[in-house]
Length: 204
Image (tube, rainbow, N blue to C red):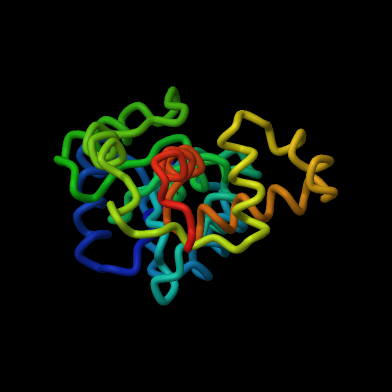
C-alpha cells in the first residue's frame, strides 16, 4: 500500500506520517509539500490513499490534487485547517471521501485513515460542530450584485436554479454562476446564504 501525504507544513506532514505508520506499519509513504509535486506523484502512481490539505500552494485553496486522485479511483482524505460549507462541498464534489478539521482530536483523523475504503462524505465531529455555527455576521449586509440578488431572491422563494433561468431570461449556466459567485463572495454555502437572505441581510 502506498499513501501520499500532502501539506506545505513539515510539522503537519510529520504528524500525519506518524498516524499513518501506526495504522499501516508496512505502508509506503510519500510526502509532498507542493501541489505540483502531489499531482506528479498521483499521475505516476500507483497510490492507494491521499491525505491532503486544501491550501498547499501559496495558501491557494485548490482541489486539483483531489480531482486527479478521484479520476484514478484513489480515495482522498482532506485534512484542512479551514472549515466552511463552501470548502467542504467543493472537496466532496471534487471526489474526496472524508473531510477532517485540523482542530479536531487525533482519533478523528485516525478513524478516517483506518476506514478510508468504506467512507463516503465523512465529516469529523469537530467539523460538524464548526459548520453548525457558520453564519453570516449579524448586521452585516450580504455582498450581492443586482444579478446575483435577483437569482437569490427567487431561490429563497423555492425555485430551483433550472426554474430560475427562464424567469430571468438567462441560461442555466449563467444562473448557476451567479449563485456560486454570491456564495463565494460571502464565504458561505447556498443554504447559509438563503437563511441570511430570509433574515433580511440583503445587500444595500
